Image (cartoon, rainbow, N blue to C red):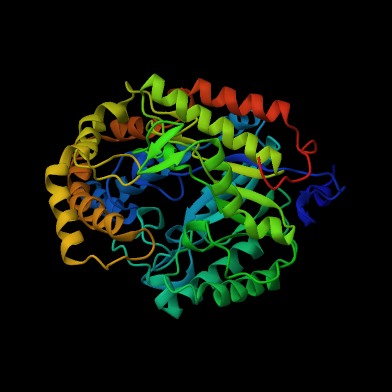
Length: 476
């Protein structure tokens, strides 16, 4: 197959290559890499706050040494080969804008920021794996949470044209760089946007799409819906060669999830409920006859065999559901400290031994939005929730209501931010060999594979090829 034939494009409700063959992208997101997240690599609060604290301890030179080594170890040729061996054909590569631009020098592109992105795209290509480039953290933060590197809980991106201008410029640079690369499946322009007004995101997307098309008219665009990629009412008629991506996390699969089937936060969750949620989140795609790609989904695993068996069943049910609708998908996430990854840290690794007690404290304080609950601090949080309920009963803030808002401020900012100092202090006194060992703990040969999870994915890919899916059904 020639390079031209490897380019993907939208044809009706499917992606096809240059020969017209259907290609259903099924893979994983490489979270915690070029966009680090607290629950994935074990630090508290946000990436920028963490990096700043670690830099204060290590100094500039040794700070750069450690993080470059970590990024290199986290994903290399062996990881690309491993994913291909499972039958996966796609990686979603989240990145933080800060690799490519400094806030003190806006619009000045940092060429060195592309080194790791280029390296991984090329490694995946050598193993027949496509890359979707995912802007996960935008200037000013496009949503309220840690995964957009937001230390404030306010998505300032939607309030300042300056931030929007910078993102448009950055995407033009990226699109120009990869315009002729057939192994880049496309550009996921903005992960999980959350425009509180719902009025800015539509016109901004129209501007961004036009700007990217000016420099690269060929690559497929992947557009997340508003409110964390669950709402698509800002879109009118679909744009050419565009995939509208939904995210489809199951309520029972969260860290606080209940039994499956069973109740979570007062809502009954079973296979029918999973189907109803997916149909709601993919309504725009099905109505407009455009491809369905689930950009993120996947349960959190607990370590309890009985509970995790239910989580694996959630995954199987979702994969069957996606098959029934010919949907591609990208499981979240590939590699981490032990919550969701296909592979995870060895508990005896240098990193796990160094930071294990700290991570236990972080969990006890509930200072990790994705990986912990308030179980250990309810004597503190419940009175605050009760106070908010009594004093502000009409307060229902976007996007997830009063209780989640209060938890964000108390657990995930007030408690999490001071913990960055404690995390950074654990780097103090380490020599270069010890720093290298911490980083190398994330290399694939040092990690443990979650065998049941990889077996589910391998079996699923083996028994449902890219071209054998039935016409979409309206129900399951």
